[in-house]
Amino acid sequence: MNAIELSVFASRLSAICEEMGALLKCAAFSPNIKDRLDFSCALFDPDGQLAAQAAHIPVHLGSMAYAMADIVESHPWQPGDMLVVNDPYLGGTHLPDVTVIAPVYGFEQLVGFAANRAHHANIGASEPGSMPVSTCLQEEGEIIPPTLLVRRDEVVSDVMNRLCGTDSQATHSIQARGDFAAQISACRLGADRLTEQVEALGVASYMTSLRALNDYAERLARHALSVIPQGSYRFRDYMDDDGLGQSDIEIAVTIDVSEHGVAVDFTGTSGQVSGNINCPLSVAAAAAFYALRCLMPPQTPACAGTFRPIQITAPIGCLVNAQRPAAVAAGNVETSTRMVDVVLGALAQTLPELIPAASTGSMNNVAMGAHATAQQPRWDYYETNGGGMGAGKNGGGLSGVQTHMTNTLNTPIESLEQHYPLRVTRYQLRRGSGGKGKVCGGDGLIREYQFLAPTRLTLLTERRSYTPWGLMGGEPGAAGENLLNGELLPAKIAIDVATGDVLTLATAGGGGWGKAS
Image 1 (cartoon, rainbow, N blue to C red):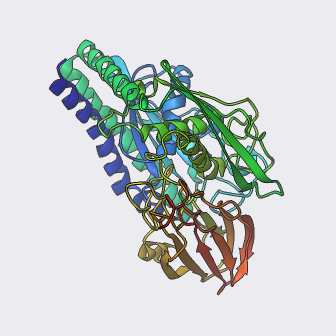
Image 2 (image 1 turned 90 degrees about the vertical axis):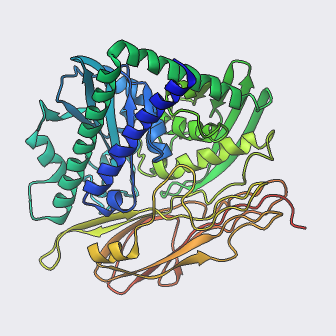
Image 3 (image 1 turned 45 degrees about the vertical axis):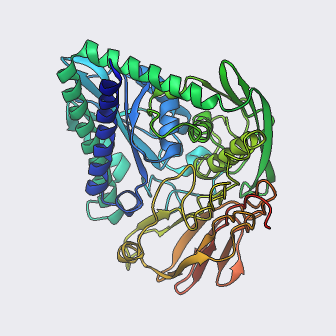
């Protein structure tokens, strides 16, 4: 296969993933998917190795790439079947992220899989928004092992009812059913498009092309990673707290670079904690893959070959390789982000002119809602909020953006106020929160919510104690703050708020780069 043919082949596969994402966005019901774009789509080979992905959410895609092979081996696949799974200890991230997987056939032969992962604001936790300050996995909602959601092209009604409820008039049930229907449709589209590609090429030619793509990706990755001088590089940073009284929780990394590749080892990281900032190894892998992928050229294919030179290890039972039934709701969103900081911090020891300062370091999670009453149906809402991007040698950090492990948008105020008893009274950049330096870090955000009905509120945030670090003499970004009616709140809390109460979320700025002149 020549270079042009390989490029066309890679583009066709990635275009399938992009089309899956476009359908999922347009068909979904909930603001989480249709507005915030909290979803990801990918294709895999028959062994569960990544074949292609869209430019969606790194923490979704990296964890799927790491763990899909185990899921593939666990099920006797048949045409027309689809599995649903969200178990973090079986390749998931946290329970609200639900994955739907469809086998793909060409000439009646299994040739791969189409998959998507999307965030559901209600996955059955006792707390509205299904992002509780939890102590074990069971408190975080419905745990879905690999389960048939579609059998022979027919939805399995008892599974759908268990996931969505049976009240066809309830808002949360309507949204959940619409979102699952959109995920199923996206998988069907991906399977149909991939079947067309395989049958146009022939199975043998398709598999040969896929091997060539992986080999090419590995060559590009090894060449890009060769910019890192051989040696051992260490860094450590800290999580603010676990929400249950434990603070100053260390994440440490050692990166060993040799002629064989890059080994990322999280030995030295604190043990798993009582709160929900633990995460499975698949999430740690996603963070390391993402940080190292940033060193590679844009044309590097998103396939399994890209990650062949990278090895991930972490002690069993540590914060980033937690064991069941440790709580993980915030590990996917907060701890993953801090792991990016420590990997980039280690690389900055030897590549300070290529690596940026730390970014906002939190997805600034807000989950809220209320159980059904005579006056109001149940509602669940969840969103993340951006902050300041860390500055680098060649430019200042962007302000008010999602950084690193998330790639979602904000929920437009119009959509938020249309769907929920909320009013956004302020939404602006937090001027001056970016770290000063030769190049200044980006500013965080201020987002202010007024509650129009009694609401249960959960905050899962970070960088309220440990500020985003600067680099090469640049100053750190300002720490974030959470306020209710002007009174300071902890970084992680679940509370009841009353009609008229006002929540102010002020997110951290990014670190500066270089000494200010």
